[in-house]
Every structure is written in C-alpha cells, then in structure tokens.
Image 1: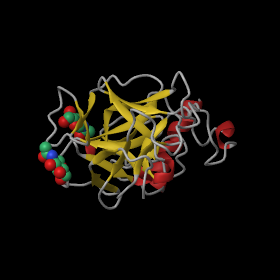
Image 2: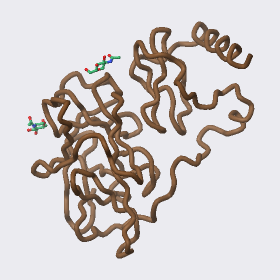
Image 3: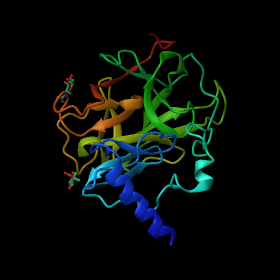
Image 4: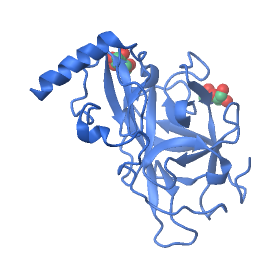
Amino acid sequence: MQLLSLVGLALLATTASAAIPDWQQCGGTSWTGETQCSSTAGCVKVNDYYSQCQPGAASPDPQPEPQPQDPEASAVLPGTPTSTGTPAGTGPGTELQSGYYWVRAVAAPNFHKYVQSKPLYATGPAVLGDYTTAGQFQVVSGQLVQLVSGPGVKPEKLLYGVVSETRSINNNSLAISWSETQNTYGTFAWGGDDLQWSHPSINRPNKSAWYVCTGQLMYINLGNYLYQTPSGCADQTIHYYNDKKANN
Ligand SMILES: *[C@@H]1O[C@H](CO)[C@@H](O)[C@H](O)[C@H]1NC(C)=O
Ligand SMILES: *[C@@H]1O[C@H](CO)[C@@H](O)[C@H](O)[C@H]1NC(C)=O
C-alpha cells in the first residue's frame, strides 16, 4: 500500500512541479534541492553524494533513499550531517609531508584551487577548494592516495580516489570520491605534472581533462577539453605542486 501511495505522489509531483533538466543533480547526501526528474528521465545514484537525472533511466532507484514523505526522514533537517562520512583523520597539516604533493588547478575559474575531500580528511566527494585546506597526495601503483593523518603519524591513514563506473553529467564524465578501499576502475598517473586517469576500454581524447562542477565537485571529463562543456562545469587540468606550503 505504501508503494502505491509513493507512486501516486510521484505522479502528482511529475505533473505539479518543474522537472530537473537531464544530467543535473537530483539527490545525494546533503542534497536539499529538487528531486524530480522529467517524465522521460530517472534519478540515478552515481555515488552516495550525487544522484543525477539520466534520460531513459528507470526511476526511482532500485534502492531508494528515504522518501521525503516518510515521517522519520522528514525529522532530519536539510543540511544535518549524516553518518556517511567516516572521519578518517585529522589531516596532514599545512606543511607538505615528505613524498606527497599538493594538487591544484592553474586556470580560471579555479586558479590555485586545491584537491581535497569534502568533508575534510574523510570519505566523501573529491572537490577543488581553498589553499588553506589543501589535501596532500601521491600516485602509487595507479592509485590516487590522500594522506589524512597528522604529520609524522605512523602508520599513515590514507584515503583512495575512487572513480565511479557510472557516467554522470552529459553522460561524458565520471565522479570521484574518497574511500578507505582502493579504486578498482582505471588507473591514475602523472603525465608531466598533470593528473591523468585512463582505462583500457575508454578512448579519451585528452587524459588530463577534468570538469569542476557545481559544488566544486571533480569529474573526469571523458570528452575533449573545452568542447561542449556542460552547464555548471568548468574545464580544468589538475597539476601537482611541491612547495612547502600551498599558496593562493
Ligand atoms: C552513455 O554513454 C555510453 C557510452 O558511450 C552509452 O553506452 C550509453 O548508452 C549512454 N547512455 C545514455 C543514457 O545516453
Ligand atoms: C589536454 O588539454 C590541455 C588543456 O588544453 C592541453 O594543455 C594538453 O596539451 C592536452 N593534452 C593532449 C594530449 O591533447
């Protein structure tokens, strides 16, 4: 019966409010915006932090998030922290630790914005943010590794950059998040000082191409650099930098 009423409400919502455009965000941890895709698209979970309206996809998700009409779920105020981000460390500090790099964009609109996790030093999406909270990274055996323990703490606490196998924005990008388990999809590498990602089954025109989109979320851009840039996103390449301090 509950399912039937959910379907009824979904139909009402479809006819009552303006739908989210295809390829835009419709859900995820701490998402407080609209959740209704168009009648020809479904809200597809890309990772815990990001769901997206994808044309032709079935909706709702096979494992739906708690619906807003559920009384227990609506008791949680928008923006209330949830338990998805297990704190993994206190951070390596503002001095570069041996063997690690700062990683940053060097072009507008993200000039000297630095790779980090959100929330800081915890599992969550990869973002470009302020130099004062810059993360520290290295590439080891194809893994993008973030140091999240304090200076000199042994053993080091690490998080791994994990690439979503589900395509997101414009069906041409892959979301990145931080995880305590290693990435199993593709390989990170330095190309010169560019952070690159590749997978044998994907023929990327430019392995250094990234998008930084709404919320400063980072995506691998599977298409060409500066070509058909999705709205809400900027083309960026991402570079290591090894001065003692991250600068602005
Ligand atoms: C997204 O792109 C992949 C790979 O090119 C393709 O197989 C898939 O059908 C596309 N999905 C949509 C919804 O366009
Ligand atoms: C990728 O794009 C960047 C930015 O335009 C450019 O500097 C770089 O040379 C490109 N790499 C390739 C392999 O085309």
